[in-house]
Image 1: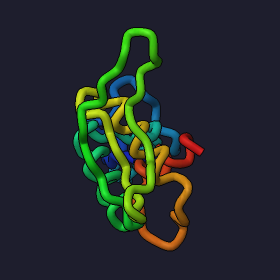
Image 2: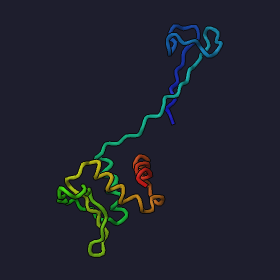
Image 3: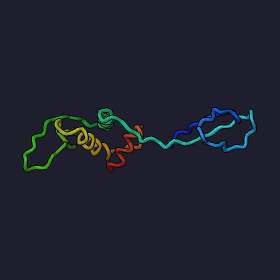
Image 4: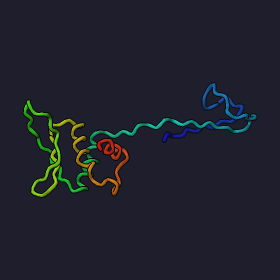
Length: 134
């Protein structure tokens, strides 16, 4: 939802909030008028490190261990940014420490998206990111 901006002025004064705009009201001199306009909503943004920290927190909440390890990639194999595995009975999310920030975010989102996200509070931006990953 956008933000409403309001401006008030006294009819007949030269200090109208928006120059050249005629009053939408038929006001007599001395009466008060106002204009409201809706600004379009700004897209939600969050820096990438904050996104990573939020997703890491969710992963830990769901009992995942997170390990950043360099994953050696042969030239003839596809790039692997990481993934979930079971190691000695524990769920472990291994993330390639040399992966791009975007790949780290995608790997974390892929791991967290399959848990029951409705039972805990998640920041709206992070929830939207996880919905897109589904």
